[in-house]
Every structure is written in structure tokens, then in C-alpha cells.
Length: 84
Image (tube, rainbow, N blue to C red; front, side):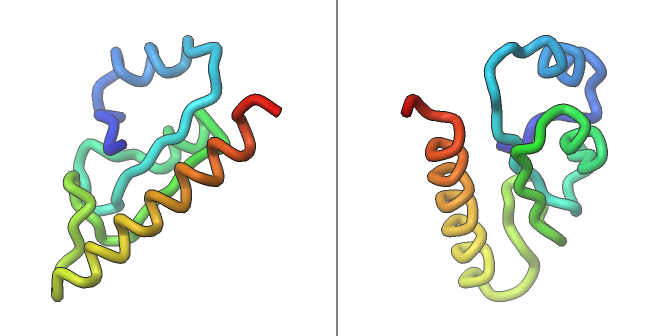
């Protein structure tokens, strides 16, 4: 979650990964690069306007909804990539 995709060494390490992985980040996070994330893996959850902590501006309930989206994305990732 919220990987430091602005760091070349992080992107390089993820590029060498042999196992599938899920990347989660927000568009208001300076460390997030959605295009790089989608190049590295098909398993991406990008949250519009979320910062590095996956918090959204406005009422806290909006950020709590993001947590639910992250949990759903993890469940889906496990379902798709886990053992049969």
C-alpha cells in the first residue's frame, strides 16, 4: 500500500518481482504514479484525491470508505491469485 513509486529503486525492485502483487495508492500522493503502477501489475487500486495515508479531504467517513475499498481489493486479489 502506498508504495514509493517516485523512487527508481522501488520501481526496479517491484519490476523484478516474480509473484503477483497488488499496488494501492492515491492520486494526491506525491510518491504515487498510477501509470507506473499499472505498468508493473494489473492489480492496482488507485483512489482519486487520496493522500499517502489514503485519506481524503472532507468528512472522515469518506476516508473510512476508502478502507472498505482497500479491503475489497485485497479480497479480490487473493481470490484471483491465491491457491485454487
